Length: 359
Ligand SMILES: [Fe+2]
Image (cartoon, rainbow, N blue to C red; front, side, top):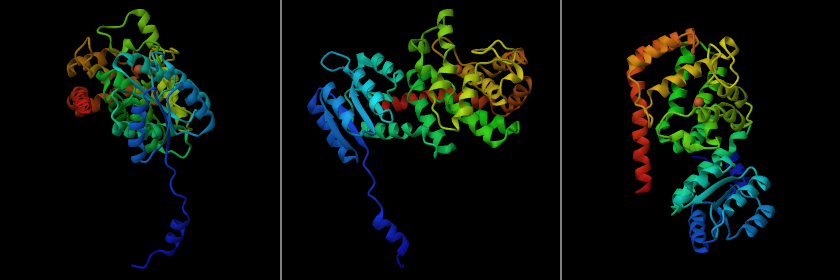
């Protein structure tokens, strides 16, 4: 076959694809040299720093797509300083923390300060390369060229690697909420534009929990105290503030902020009621409560269908928009048994994946 002359011309003048640049920071030189060698073989350009001063100088002088830093250097939490310097000097760059088991709370605290994720030591370099690729994808969330499918993929990844990882009981909650929201919105004739934004809010509605001051609430063995409940109430607005500035996310953030508002005005944070809450916000409320009831927690089993239906009947026109609820009950009639089994299946899958990763 004749070669396409235009294609050949274009190929001849195409710039070679730039390799992503990564700064590796750890006081154990041998460790970072090993990680660097593997990352270079996987297509990254790497630079090594073994102390905070050198790392800061490099961040001032060169461009990095990502920074990987140990949490503890010589017994001090200099990793936090590297994170702070990166956020200030190169806010586009994703930051990954490497941590020993005892330092995991510090690594989670780093996520709240803007780190993308943490890896537990000893770090498998190939796993590090895969995580870096994912983190760099997530950093693109503000790019205006991204479409619905791109944003859905990025938000799914962000949620899976933050709140659903900290609280394994919620594995898959965002994906299920998205799916049920899509089906309910289609059933109710919501136009595609709003339905897509609702799906994104379904994925990310609880993302703000990762920014709560104390993440032990998420997994505590029992119901929340009144003070803890007041703290948890901050998560809808935290999520709405932290999701990003992509134009498509404006309404997504509104629906996230509304997901705990209630039809009768007894929700939070603004206590708005009725049609003051957007229709997607009212759909998200019904769907999200259903999947939470279906999910086993450290202090409760997942609910059976009759108990769920009793609860919904009791809360019709109280917590929930009656029209939205009535349509959702039709979906539950068709899919309720499968949907009630879904959280346990997702949790088992997440546990098996975690065990395989640690093997
Ligand atoms: Fe929530």
